[in-house]
Length: 133
Image 1 (cartoon, rainbow, N blue to C red):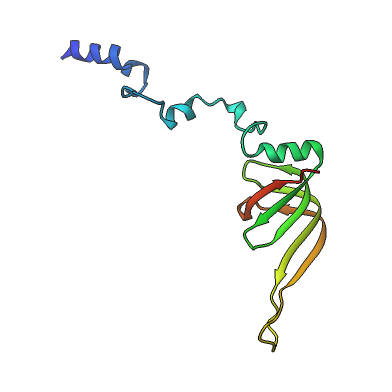
Image 2: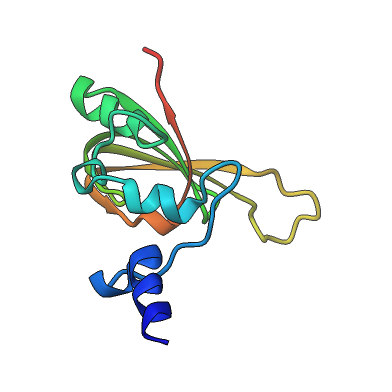
């Protein structure tokens, strides 16, 4: 029994406090890839989907944001985080309203408003498009 315990320690690393790892075949699992990710890469937005926002902050260019309340926001991004929370300036919010009057066929009315500074919570963001100008 003692020889089996020593063999298990050598083969599986129980003595070092490590948990035994199953044999991996094929592509590495997401868990392995997450373990190998470096902590400094966590907030590196130069690559990936958040790179669009990073470029807009550097260039001070406009973005068009589609929100969950079916409104569109055209603004300049001053800051953002990994949750897509954003600090925006020179914001133009646009939406369409259908009047509920006495008429049967009321035409939709496009409305907009200007907001100088705005904090947008990331869970309301659906899509972010960079203005090519």
